[in-house]
Length: 194
Length: 144
Figure 1 (cartoon, rainbow over the protein chains, first blue to last red):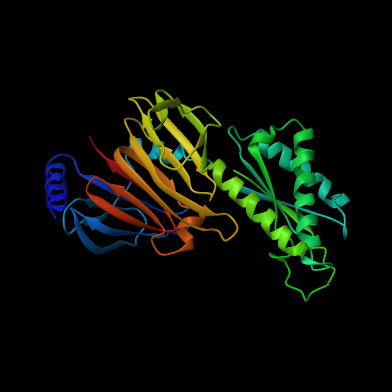
Figure 2 (tube, rainbow over the protein chains, first blue to last red; figure 1 turned 135 degrees about the vertical axis):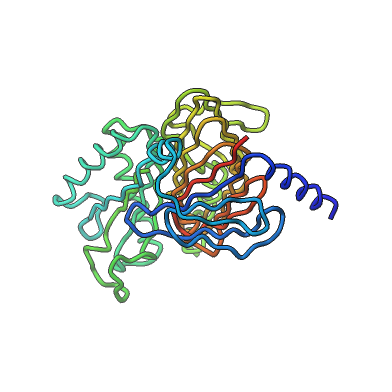
């Protein structure tokens, strides 16, 4: 209780100088989400910022939310400094093998180029199988597929410390099928480059 | 029996990856830009791995940009002090919980999979407010 009073006093003191604020922006794909103001000035609120390009001034029990015409230069600089979105690539495999299909060979080159152009890249390699064979065999096969791609990337000069490989077996089918169905779309490795 | 062994091996592998605890990587930085981990102050160089509990600290001309393992992206502006107080993420289920504390400065955010995984699973705290992020891009500013 005492702490709460101190926090409230601190909030009032802060509100006395420049105000904290939150600006909701449109998403990169044109839509936008929401930001709920769960607490302001030490008190719970049910305010939700729902419109893109609005600024909420924080700290008062009833936060004000107003539309803005443009970002301040410092805000625009901050937004332009955001890293690019993660990018996903998929490589496919013939049944039961850990060698990529000939059609997937160019994807490997795209992948190499994408990692090379991202300073501080982190690469997540996830292997999958179709439903042919036992769960245990498919767990092992999916792990081998992921490691095969990781090894190929390592052989192209990428540091292993930026990459991780995991096998998901037949748990995450791209095309849902019954058990023991051969399906080329499900025999894949997904690589996420961040 | 074999299945059981595989499961045990898989859970050990999972535990091992959790212990390494990489939650994000620095993509770029300029000026005075540090990662504070306990008593240690590490330069926020490109490729630097972050752990939960780390502070991002910048000086007058400092900037840091980074991407988290759930695809959340941050840009930290000058004169900032920002803590990643909590970051828990299950890569397999793509669910988690993420709390960032902006003590001062400015932060641009594009939220990732954690924000999508549950209502207010991603929260941002400022000295006088608490925000619940519902899948979006936004800026938080806390003037000195």
